[in-house]
Length: 462
Image 1 (cartoon, one colour):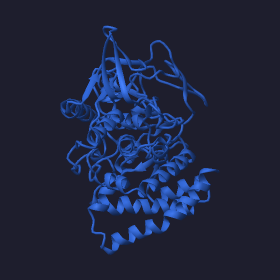
Image 2 (cartoon, rainbow, N blue to C red):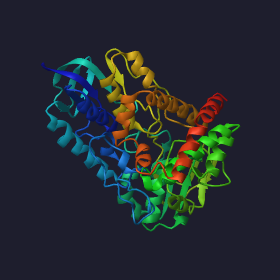
Image 3 (cartoon, helix red, strand yellow):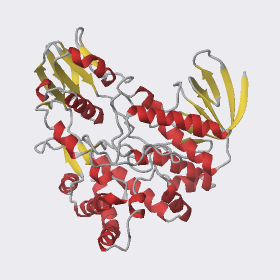
Image 4 (cartoon, rainbow, N blue to C red):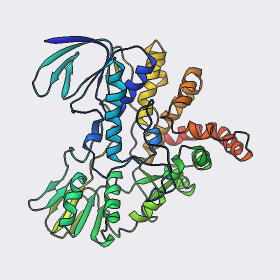
């Protein structure tokens, strides 16, 4: 059996694994080995549906050392007026470039594609079953803990009868023209993308039925624009969020205040959302989504028959010529967390809410900077993926706790200030801090920080 030495083995060459490797490469002289079951770097992006796009700006996604996109403002389409959103193919090509031109060209990175880690550094090549022993000198890095569930490969939790056409969104481009009616299953970002794709490509809203098991809260994309030109939307949004957190008397009251502050949105003003997974949507997209009038709110699908749709909350009739688009796979679904730093292992997780690549890069910086696991873990409390507003409050509390800890360390502050994956600092650096309007927003955030944190602690326990 062949063998070789490495300092770090990263198990999983998706977005988080690559972001970690990229920063570790800059911060240390370590040798790194990445292992992945796919034939290319980029993780789930290699299997994404073709019309997927980022739902937050490209400028703070990916790895720290290499820009994604050109930080341009879209001049057309439903994202018009906001920073560009990379398409799925653009993201896939970007990660392939990161591996080929950045990591492998360093001479300190080795990539083992089409391979699986069997444990203790033993790697099996999937095509030949050849075994290789990788002697890891420092740590294993598990980049699979927050692995995405995706439509193409997830296992359905409902039954589809014979003769029913039910596809992942990956096949929509090839199958849509063969049908006159479409039913979207799911209420997440994939479902929203599928509805928008149908409408943008000529489907009439009357042709679409949308099965929404639980209505989602959506983040207004105007509030997550990273440039100085959007300072009052982004940092002003932070100020309004802190006001909502400091004044809310309950979970529902907080959500209502976020909506009133134009930070969160809902599909139907008369239906209270029950889930919060963090989809980020422009108002123009929301307007399009609201054109679909046939929205079924009877819980999750149990069975699809040619003439009937059985759901947890009841049964509704169905047309035999319907194309069902399965968007029920949940991307980041982990609700549990685990300690990030252990003796011989790092388990990558979010340490800032909804920011997996920034989190992975900062974990690498902390690994390279500090000596003991106790301190490292104190700086990297894992943030669980959210499901409800209540869990959003809990995760936001952990995320804020981490932010406070980072703000007390000069080296971390300096690193974040130069990291392109930080989607918040750029706006504050691109404005004149002496401008009275800018100063007023900054002072409001400073004034509301402690009351917001204290009340958020109470709300999270309700």
